[in-house]
Image (cartoon, rainbow, N blue to C red; front, side):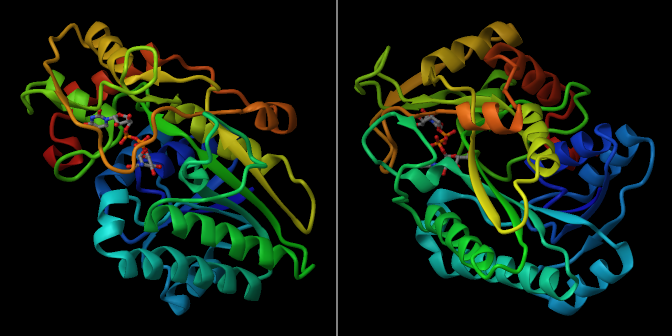
Length: 338
Ligand code: UD1
């Protein structure tokens, strides 16, 4: 298939481009580079051994997007592009609703006019919010707690409504848990701007000496060691999950949702210990109060993706830490050093 990847220069998008090519598909990237770098695309081309067609655009620019569809004759779309920082979404909700939702509506409109009806959407476990149980199953009601989470839940609803028109849309919603790791080559990886919000990039920057200590948000949760528990999965597994979703068509007028996770959790202290072992570096730790909005523990029930898509997340936490460390040491300033 020839696949348009929106946000293909970003962390998950870039790994998915490689997974698509490895599976024999073709990838075409659009990205506004608001939170990603053209250097990532250069490295993708280097890893792929050929250039990746790329257009810099904002998805809300329907004319520019339409021209990409006319030129590239794509069969399907994987849609990653969007703002993704939970804390920022609380401060500037309108930006999040406009950028994430308006761009998805524009994308779907352009797809409709070009008769492209196959879409894989990058949703998030954050749509579940705090439903009580720690094991998240696709059938649970959605109750996000941040504007970012609401944009994902609202887009899921928009896609359900679109499929309900009976116009033959084949949509897949993928709810990710916590992606970590990097490509084993060390050439592409996560490149956060400023202070990382997420645990792994922060730990990695402490290990390499760019930050003094990891702040652990809460050590009094009802968990194995008192720290928060999450379902961390390797970004390469997440990438193959997208290929599996694309290749498995549930048929026209479908809008299935799948959890992509490993099915068990690791605590903050377990993650730090795994990174210590992978890097051979000391990682200083500082205990701090709970971060507002955090859950104690959650992990995926990934059995639907296993059963229907034939997909599992096989990489271990340790492998993901080794790959993150390789990326971090080879690129201490991310793509900016290049
Ligand atoms: C966060 C987002 C989620 C998003 C996901 C993407 C929030 C509330 N949720 O999930 O919507 O889909 O990232 O990867 O931001 N921790 C520390 N110290 C740190 C950073 C994190 O102790 O410096 C802890 C957190 O309290 C949590 C765990 O590490 O227990 C994971 O945190 P994080 O990487 O931010 O992911 P989530 O909060 O699960």
